[in-house]
Length: 468
Ligand code: ADP
Ligand code: MG
Image (tube, rainbow, N blue to C red; front, top):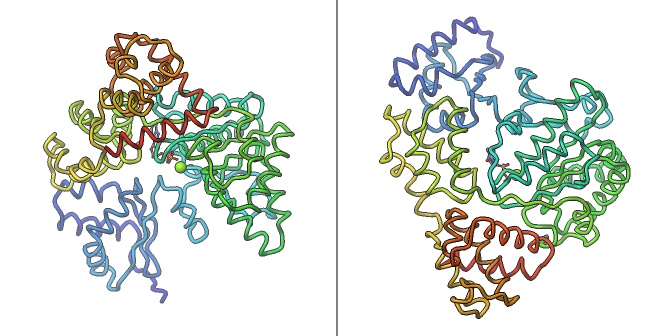
């Protein structure tokens, strides 16, 4: 039913906010309603723009009955609500066909794609403008991946990093870096080199597109589209597993692009040699350029990330609180962000300042779920048992090859699995200095990429430590 709306947009919105203000406490109003803006209200449908994606779920969960009753009281009929977030790519993608309320500034659409109607089929490319190099916090856990990404973004196709492969566990910033490269290239395109065609795609979308192109009998369009990239960024390659035809299609695209000096950047959840269900010839090609990992962030980086996120949200968090969260949420950055958001939401809902007490109350569940604290002593014990080596020799100065390797691994795991500083780790290993500790870590990192047995030892030992 198409209602003609008698109320002007601004009038409706004023009335709406006023009614809400009377129904909720001022703190909640300022947090959850003041930042909203009305996009449209017509056809029984109210579209509201929210500053952050999490606002929509919060409003839906906590305020939907209120929103509905207030608006129907004003308009005289029932409406449904739609939220559009200024920072959520998926939503933007979903809504792109149904609404044109989006400001272009938030969404960078590759111009080549827009011009070329024959490739409309492959949808447009959306980059989340929140994922930039500027918003990426660099620490020891990700500095190498960051530097390589930066180098590639500055001079795509011309460095030795082709392909650039970034691997690591969930929520550690792989997609963020990939999109930062895309964003950077699209932006530099705007000024000088006009014709750089950037394609960012998840491996799942690549697969779906390919399947669809076969169904529609136009697989050659799929190849043509991806072969037109100057930079091809494919996220989460592990999902190509056991999809043989997709892998074959990708293999040919890869070769063509690589031969022509086009840049390829890939992410995956494991080092290439450990990927299951992928053709050897692909895995082999993944290692032609640079393979680099992202590790879980260390304590200092976690603090820096929290502070940056809080700052971006316009809130201040006390050092003590940041330390508390960073000490307790150690595994991944998505969780770290989630904890901060929950804390902010809680604080504004109850109109209370964030305190340590509140933090432990709110984050209690998350904290209880995490791994029990792993100590360096415990890692030393595990490693010495695993390799059947005396604890004394592991910690001491023995230069026997197998002892030295076990020691490198124990040092590496101490860095990965505990929050200890390099100095503390050195002290636990017979007073070695900080540079010796770094040397061990680098040795293992290198071996990890090349030597499957080392990788397996580490995997087994990490799992043992975490499950203990
Ligand atoms: P992945 O793709 O590895 O699973 P994402 O790139 O999606 O992880 O990162 C998860 C979240 O953590 C994102 O919101 C991202 O912005 C944030 N994030 C990850 N690494 C960093 C970092 N170094 N600095 C700031 N934010 C980060
Ligand atoms: Mg990702």
